[in-house]
Image (cartoon, rainbow, N blue to C red):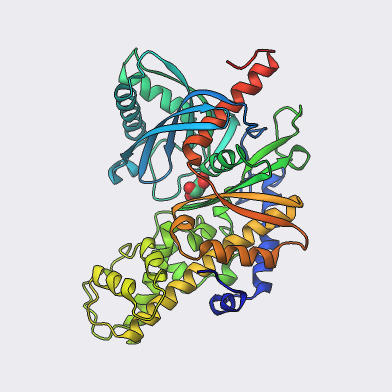
Length: 456
Ligand code: BGC
């Protein structure tokens, strides 16, 4: 159902002026990140990715891609033939004990999955170029050299921070002691970058990538003259994709003026207190918990669910999932079918219609704030780039499954961008697989063209 501007005001608890203040702060923090002098102290790291060119549709080849960034790990085989892309993939679970274990355990698990995939897909004895989508903040020293700067999103594997993740992968493959399986890592890619590459393959105006999933992040193409911390060459094209890692916006306290008691409580009990403040107000890993904390408080104060059982899920951390928010907001009438279903799932049985109304209202407030905050972020980038027309490639479960996120964002961005700038939010498909393979493909295309070779 389209959201009209009048309806927008219903969800708006922070003024337009407040969002403009957020934009101003973000702009400053992004510039600090880009500057050689301030980067060390900056929260938003603005990592140059070493991706200098977008796909032009002439890419060809067979690639392996890896995708690590959430509770699942995927291995993919990607066949690119100019505009045609064929993908076969397999998903493997990463158990929590591995997410919180050692780096060796994590990379051994990854190597196991790769070997299984190669065996199942009859790829033995082929050395395929590989693109690794590794969706955590990494300082890149080259396209295939990336050191983890910190873990986010529920991962905390010991011994990986500051290490080159390609080296860790190679070492794990070596430990497997199989001679028939080999991988050549061509590129390490953030999921925001993969998302952008995947959409840019068919849309020439696409210069920004956005992830709204378990985590939240954006990347965009920046002119080298604006990247003070760039230490690479200045040959053409004189641009580089920047992985902003804007999830860390606010870690220095600059967003405290809009944080609520629920944001603070969620942060205090998270595995990374004080970190990823902007991300914690937006992304799917946290949204359900913010709603749960608000419901819990209202219930404690006797304003909701008068006789709720204190042992039910509502009173347990992490038991109200973000998918519930999307489901609840998908109810379009006053029968509250989805709200009731969710309440029953979390063990709340004694509820009134008024309770259902309040639950839904709280969901709309929390998700609209997330949509508006991410819009303020995007509008900052759109205004900075000042392209007359720009496409933003978007992916992530929150954006895909929330019924109003897209519409709320379009309206808010329209309000916040400089007059005359046109933008389009484009759902991008399989950024992590296709995107990572495309980064590898573009790297091979550029390398071959420098060496005067024709692409095979
Ligand atoms: C990570 C980013 C990633 C984002 C979306 C954040 O927690 O730091 O690298 O792009 O999540 O997956």
